[in-house]
Length: 361
Image 1: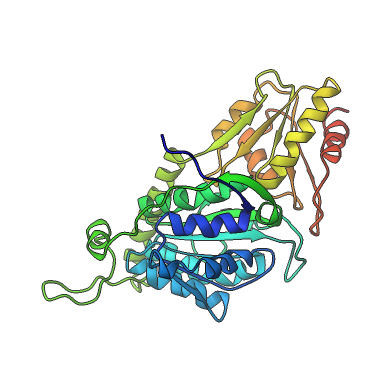
Image 2: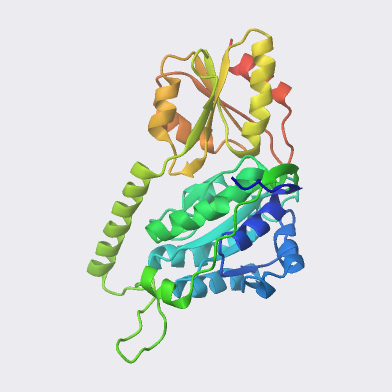
């Protein structure tokens, strides 16, 4: 077995390295704190000289998402990254891609809002990511990493899911994971597909006019409501298939737990320490971490909570995922929420105090 390549880097840098290694054809982005290291690292690595990957700093986030749209329409593995206000600007293009059933990968390294907000970490784009921030009835596959290793691993996974279902996929990170440094194992190099392989694997893509056939038309527009309804019904069936097949989650110490903390991303990292502190005090607490926040692990949350004394949802926002947790549990056990706002990252002790004050009354 070949020796694994272990290195130390930031989460944002891991995204860039993984993009090159997983055979990405093109990255189109625009710098914004706290994710600017993604495009900076790509420019330093110059993958156009080694793998042929295209890297473009677009004039805006709106331009970058439309470049992804164009490349994805040709069957290419295309991606972009941004932070919260920039991703807000991309929502029209993401909705267009969902309507046209185009695969593409988007990284959101979240910061505090609303509006321009702060450059400090937050998880307040949960609704935007999981509800479909643009117009229409659509969903984006959303992966929530809680480590630098997962930042790297989820790039290839996001592309895999995006192409499997012809649907946009998002890596929903935040400023903590994007800026923190950890040891990781980079994925092996995957060769970029040839044009012939793209045409064979993506018969729906548009390759221009050929002598033997007309080009495919890539669009989300349909003026006849009956046909548009058929398209929407098709999309809803696809989303149900994703719900049935692609739910991912992780649990820790839930078997003997009286209470369960539900957290994603960096909040889950903090919750791990909170659980350690709580157990030192004799409070039996476990962790449920959604890895896919869409599709949300509804049935799994319900099952893990059954018979517990209470569930605390810890997030770095005003309480967004807690709505999905409450819907899943449906009043079977008490559910409460704890979070910090404005870019303030909570301490583990605060989560333990919230558990005591909100559920252990």
